Image 1 (cartoon, one colour):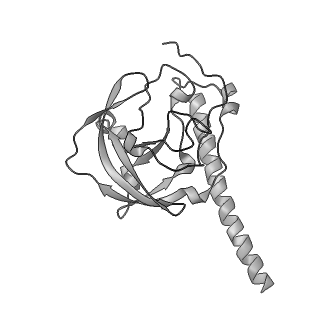
Image 2 (cartoon, one colour):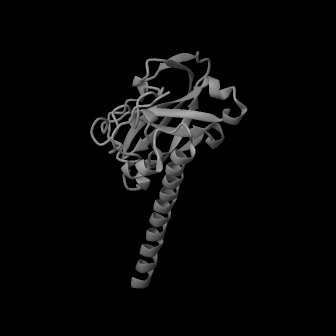
Length: 202
């Protein structure tokens, strides 16, 4: 019996460790993108100010996808005072920590016209951690149409990230629509940047 318990314990431990390693790898790629992107607000020296919650598999869920038909394009405002054209693509329904949650998934019209980004979907949201542990302007999750399988999509809040506006002014970061303002805390993904906010020189 003790051997069986030990094997089960080791099995669960390995599974949890594997998830943590996957998130750690994802975050290393995320940081590397700042250094390689010439339009990035951060340099390698700034990366030490990026903060994240510990990986938590409770914040990785399978969401039911309900595609929205007949939606008209609308202008999503940005923190720079401009707008960008989006369309409401789908409703996502899932349970998080035992509570039912619904979010709206969007598609950027300009990106959809580009063959390299035609599968790109955008999930901006705010929650009760905003202006506390999290950047006040909300966070984003990137998804793809190809990730929708049998009417479901994997949604991992451990991969939620800050917009560039969290680090510097001068960027056109979309403001999460009110319908994606969650009345719960999402203690997963990227936290508030602890470095000094920069000023972008165009």
